[in-house]
Image (cartoon, rainbow, N blue to C red; front, side, top):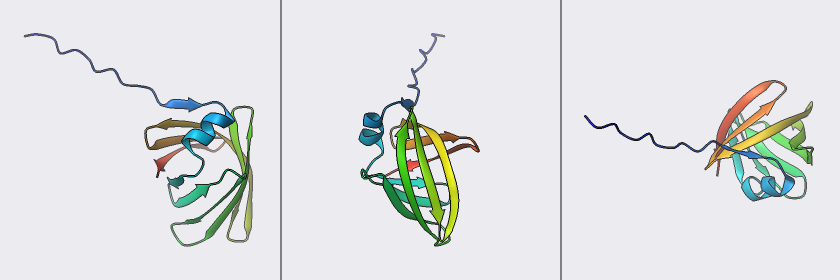
Length: 105
């Protein structure tokens, strides 16, 4: 029986620069676990949680990470920074509280 060649699987693209972030993420809807938000080029983002709370963010690109201050409804959730990776329309965010995945639309 002949061996079947293995299919090469591309690794997700690590986003390392503000330019790459703009190309892959800015202007798209980020559909994550429990939320949807649109990241805007002006350093803001807006969206909602699945249970209807408004999300507002201010963000900057800093040393290869996306850093954002998040407000859910009227509650300030503070600042966190994330490393991004994309694979087609799938994204992975890794921050101090773990990893999350979702879709870019």
